[in-house]
Image (tube, rainbow, N blue to C red):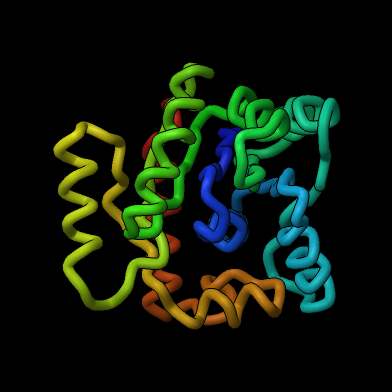
Length: 210
């Protein structure tokens, strides 16, 4: 039975699609049966998957781009046949985002270390609470220097919010791999970026029920 993760953040540009694709590639590369659903109308992951098919990527990832009433049906079908189902949700609070969060076991909120992203995150966490879904926050696109990421992490922990320990850096390797339809664990498996994604995937695996 699959563990279903909705990657959600109300603010656009948070790196949802890139994070979902990289986690899917890392999990599939470890031998798991992974499905990736693109529910975002921008269909960024649909284009990534097209490039992935051209690249003949080593790990198999089942892909679909359902909308509306097809979303819960697709999730239910994939839940029975996969180990992980990852959902890239719309960046705003629309019906498909609510449906995806309602169907998920975990809401993963990518958070860039900026005040604007921090403020926008509150709406996503509120939606997860409304739907009674577990949430986890992952700092994403973290710059190599500066005090703001550490300050935001301290603020989240002080407020008792579910911040995951692994962070994802702001690295050019993510964009390069994504453009080729790959994850960084496939394109540059020994890179710091790949290590970060594998660490985050392991942290998510630790949240699965025994």
